Amino acid sequence: MPRLFALSASARSQGSRSRQSTDHAIVSFREAGYEIDQIDIGQSPPPFADDLFLRASFTPREALDDTLRAALAYSDSMIDRIDAADEVLIATPMYNLGMPAALKAWFDQIIRPGRTFTMTRDSASPYKGLLADRPVHIITARGSSAFAKDGAAAALNLLDPHLEALLNFIGLAQFHHYDMAGTDEPEFDADLAISAMAIKPSYMPVALHAA
Image (cartoon, rainbow, N blue to C red; front, side, top):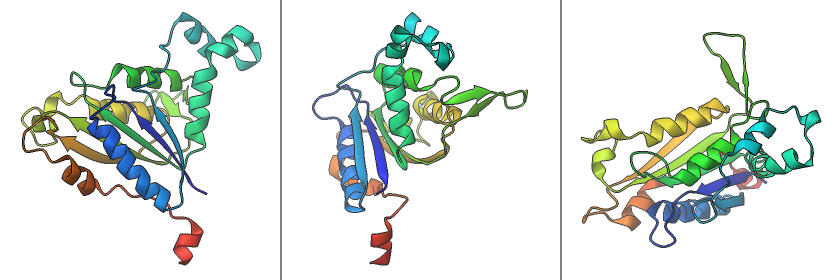
């Protein structure tokens, strides 16, 4: 059975457009026979990368003591869950031109030397992602349509390029973008915008193919 790892990053407990989009997308994946592994870091933020975490990250695994292993427990769990997924879905709003603090903290937990990236001897490409590539569905919600791809404030959209850079850094490069721009504007129709995304799984179970 294929698996989807789905992450929501909105800090809103009610009225989150990105979370509504995630819920809508998950229906499609479930109907296609996917197992869903879902996490909401907006409501349960990950720990920040502190001194202990950084020391543990750069300590060889064979030299880790119980304290250092505990500092890496959340990180190891998240990396394992991504690695077990056939596809990844990340849904996030834009906050102050970029990603929410919880999402940045999550990336700080999963970008680990020796686990998700390594350094190379190639000066033209000094870093190599260690995770196997797989499709990543990226849902972004922004209050103003000016931040859309061709909008007047498109150059201030630091969210999309940052997301792609971090995901690519760990080896993920198959991006499918779904943009909800203008969520705070009077004419915005959430139901129409969500249904128009038409997020579909990339893989279909053999039984469904046969049918």
